[in-house]
Every structure is written in structure tokens, then in C-alpha cells.
Amino acid sequence: MPHPSDDFLVVGVDEAGRGPLAGPVLAAAVILDPDRPISGIGDSKTLSPQKREKLATIIQEQSLAWALGRAEVQEIDALNILKAALLAMERAVLSLSIPSSSKPILVLVDGKHTPSIPFATQAIVRGDKTVPEIGAASILAKVTRDTEMIALDLEYPQYGFAKHKGYPTRAHIVALQEYGPCSAHRVTFGPVRTVLSGVGDS
Image (tube, rainbow, N blue to C red; front, side):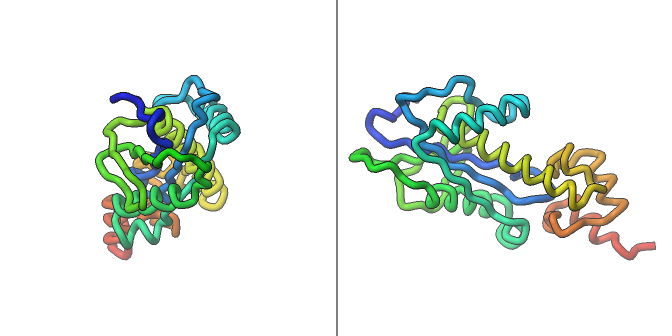
């Protein structure tokens, strides 16, 4: 896909946290500065935590604009995770301070779905690997969410959130079975629902 930055002001959007059993879903929107390219941007999942954190700082410092959006656990349970992720994306884009430009805005979103926003949008499967703006958003969303899960570990150390970030690892499932869910868990997700349905059984 040719990069459309010559004709549009490009906003890249991605989210982090659709798969975990706990914590919010975070989204980021980024407008990169074409005059200040950032090397090393790519799919956040393929980068080491140290590399992600370093790049997140550079992205925040050198982008024309960036913003975060989120959907909380209660919203995830009420809406479903896809709708909550799209809501987080919408909030991220609408929180952007759009630079003044005569170019129309084009929002490029990782995946198959786009949020409901008043701009032209295009969904790009695996866009975090091919579109720098989406890759930058992926990094910001991932770093922000991981930081929150590490902080949540201090409040609920029995679950190991700092290690697995809420994903359904074996250790997380075992902790769920032993301690039951906490307020950060998504009660509509299968493993959490299964534990809740067994609470009180002898």
C-alpha cells in the first residue's frame, strides 16, 4: 500500500489489551512528523520491553501529536471487547490536538474494524507492521497499558499482573482459581466466568 502522507494528514491508531482477562483496553492515536522520522518502529509485540519504552519516549517527543484513549473493565463487560476497543480508539482520536493543515485527515486503524469518528478511516490488517503511524500507536498503547498493569500488581500482588499483564497464562488461571476474581477482572471473559460460576461449590 503506498503511503498517503503526501495527500493526507495521517493518524495511526492501534489498541492494546483485547486478549487479557483483566485491566482496561488502551488505544493510542499518533501523527508522526515526516521531517523527523523515527527508526525502529514496528509491531509492539515483537519489540523488547526496553526497546518499546525507549521508542515510546521518542514518539511522544517527536510526533506532531499523540493521544491516548481507554475503555474500563466495566465498559468491556457491558459492551463486549470489540466495541470497547473501538470506543477506546474513538476516544484517542477525538483527544488529539490536530495540527493546523490544509490536508484532509485520514485515520489508519490496525485490524479489520474502524471506530465511529468524523474522519475518513481505513482498516489495515497487520497495519502495525507496515504503517509507521500505526506501529507508533501500537507502541504507545502497549507501554501505557503494561505500566498500568505493573501498578495494579502492587494492589493485587497475588495474581502476578506485573508478569503476565492480565493475559490468561497458566499462572494467572491458577491464581484466579485460588483467590477468585478481583475488581480488575473482566467477568464476561470465559476463564473468569468459569471461576465465578464455581464460587460457593463444595
